[in-house]
Image (cartoon, rainbow, N blue to C red; front, side, top):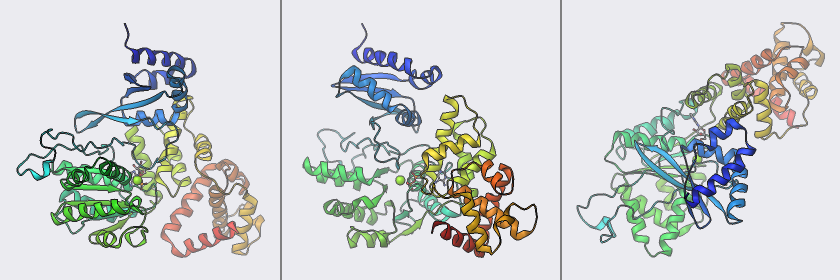
Length: 478
Ligand code: ADP
Ligand code: MG
């Protein structure tokens, strides 16, 4: 007789099979293994983190509906992910995010740390027993967030170099703490993991731990509730390389800050490495105690900037290579890199959807498909701006008549105005490259792409030109 969880999952599959495409079913549902059914929670095992994210992104509604149909309104799914953490196959338990994922910023490996894991029952506090072997602590690191996968660019040189130095010699450099900050989607979490992975690689005897600030706060609260705050503190004081991601979330949490302060001091005094990330530099952090902020400034603060076009293209190509995707043409890659300028996560999101759309719907990966997806995914705040309007602003700026834009000429000023008009049309409208080309002097899409590239390159090398562009941009928005 079949076990209950297998039965339930089989019935779910029967429903799903009728709904999704044959190939998708084979790819995304056949590899799933039901593990157990407890209360109303069905645990399913998926082969990788990517797989899990894919399900969450594309099939969560379907999964949710089916499971509720089988188990009733309280029915839920929990994933168990097989992850290759340095050779050992460690299943990671994870609650289904059930569609309304609050934080897409961090890899959702959010298994709560079991503070007592590995400790023998009669020795509840390993820290005060001299000579006791350290308990084994899982690092919570995501293997794909490695240095190899973290593309170097002008935007991250300092942080990356410092991070590498810290990983080679944790606690021994002047960069302690290493404080990495940037706005969202620019690689803080990735770099923090890379440092942790490298540190572990180079110093296998050291205990490395990555923790999100929210997790830390929750664990702290839990420890207070369970009356084992000291165990909590001791646990963290045993770490050699402690990575705390998004430290800004400590704001307003005074007793957690106080506890973190003690942990910080202990680690720092014992030459243990601290790596912190935040959305702002220490001076701008609000709601954090002064004594903490002053400590954050002890080491090195390094920011991550917005990657330039070259770096964005490299990031996309690396991602494509890692996904093992056959061929995405360079012009599509460039189109993505030119279209999404300020957030690497958003850029990757579009790439992943593009790959998904093309595999699931058997569509070729073209610039048009890319544009469709960008329209859907990336916020576009300026629908109403038209090409004509943009042309007018550009021409007014240079004091020339608008109809010169369409003129067949190689005159430098006219070519430049035309290129700028194309660039801004690309930036501010949802029109296709072909349409923009057509309306800007009857050119083809390749010319428009070339124009965008030229303008972006010039912006990066020529300050006066950059000023012009910003000036025009402002006028377009007024
Ligand atoms: P943050 O923590 O700053 O919000 P993340 O570290 O989560 O940003 O980065 C968002 C995505 O962008 C991740 O998938 C990450 O791998 C990718 N990414 C950011 N910067 C780079 C880079 N320099 N090279 C490769 N991938 C990058
Ligand atoms: Mg992050």
